[in-house]
Structures are given as structure tokens and as C-alpha cells.
Image (cartoon, rainbow, N blue to C red; front, side):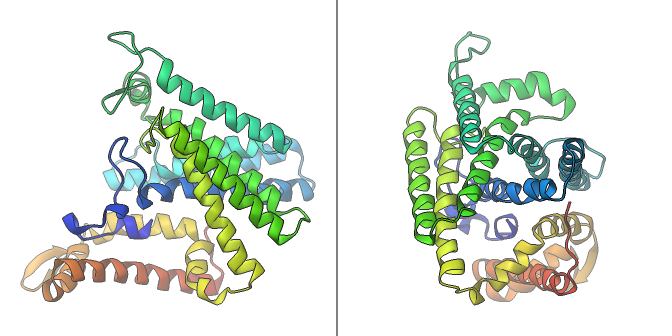
Length: 340
């Protein structure tokens, strides 16, 4: 997320680091958000079962889950409000994460077979709605960038409440449920070979379903089509299998420490850089080479002036990520973690 949000290469940006166009397939940048949701799903069993193990009542668990969802939602609104410089109640990345967590965690206690069935019903129903529900003015189903069910509902019903994108809670909740079910499999007493085989096998199966569904309803991040959800979940499961083999089976963990620093404080790594950027880096002006620049532009020119746009752009992006990592390293060593 830090890489994609802070790339400074303009037209030289690699295609995989920008979002695919409408029905234009899936790029690496398109997998970041669904993998956030997939990882959230992987964490849900630890959260919910931990509450149960501590003897929390049903109402206490509902309160804790609702509070976490609300905290994520309000942090997302804080980011959107900071970017607009006015209070805004809306849906964006963290808000959608919060809502998907809320429904995923509430559904989680059912048996895993029922959880899989619910995820399948959510995706199937959502996919059928996108392809079959007739839309005005011609009373025919449509799936075009400027004319589709999600856009119609957003513009005519949800925009007035700043809740455009609310329909995306349906497929993203399914993705959280899929992730949670993978964690159940990993926590069994089966052998490591069985677990890795299951992750790879089911992951390939989900990819296959996504590829097949893509022929009817294309991959599309904007509206979170079921084909996109299944492909993201399948690729996430295969990647998880690889990491499980490397980190847990082989014990090769030394190389992952930089990622651990980012991941152990993932919420802070996402929220604080955005707030600092929009409140300070983009607003505060300083003198640089005889001109007035925002701190962010001065930082960028510090590299692109002597190195050129391409090398300097990469240097800026890498230096930005390194600064964030060093701050997170300090927080990691102090055990100051932002959690909800």
C-alpha cells in the first residue's frame, strides 16, 4: 500500500503498480485491498475464539466486535476528512474493512460448512444481481463503467448519505469468511504437508472458479465482482501456503523481519503516513533551491533534480517507505502498537 500510494514515476509507472482499467484484468495493485480483507479473515478466528476462551458473554462479544468495526470506520472517516479538510462521513478503505469485519466476525461462530455456504450465497447472489437486475432507462441489465447496478444504486440511493460503495460489503464479507475458514484448516492437528496441500489445492480451485466466472462477469475491483473476489482469495491462499512453508516449516524467518515491522503495526502504517502527508507534507511550505515548495515536493525534487525523473522517482518512493519503516521500527521496539 505504501508503494502503490507513493509511487512518483508518472507515465513511467509500471503497469502492475496502477489499478487495471474497467474490466481490464487484475494488476498487483488490485490485489492489495482484497489481501487486506483476506488477512483480516485469517485473523478473525483468533479474535472471536479468544473472546470465547476468556468467557465473554454473547452480548459482550457483540459489543467488542461492534466497537472494533466502529473504530475502523471512524479512522477511515478521519482520513477522508483530513484529505478534504472538512468533516465527512463516507465509505473508503478502512470503513469497508470495518463493515466486512463486523459481518464476518458475527457470522464466524457457525460451522465452517455453513460459513462456506454463506460465502457462496453472498457471491452468487451478488453476481446474479449485477448481471440480471434490469436498470432504467431501458429496463435491461447492464454492466458498463457508466451504467451498472452498483453505480445506479450509488448515484440514486447512497450518494445522498455519502455511503457510495455500500453494496461492496456483500462480496467483501464473503472474502473475510473465506479467509477465516483457511485459518480453521491451518489450526488443525494435520501434518504440514496436508495443510500446504489444502491451501494450494483450494487456492487453485478458487482461482479456477474466478477465471471461469470472469468469462461471464469480468474481474472488476470497482464493483468487487465475484470473479475478482475468488481470484484474489485463491492467489492469497497460494501465497499463504508458500509463506507457511518458508516461515513455519523451514524456519527461514530472518528475511521477513522488515515485513514484520510493517505488519505488526499495519493500521498505524496505513493511517499515520496518510495523515502526515495531507496535513503536513502537502501543506507546509519551505524554501528549496530558491523557490517555495511543499515539504513533499521538496523531498521529491531532492532526488529527481540530480537523478532524473525515473531514478529520482524511485529514490523518493524508496526513501519514503524507509522513513516510515524506521518510525515503525521505533514503535515496534517500544511495543507501541495501534490496535482496535
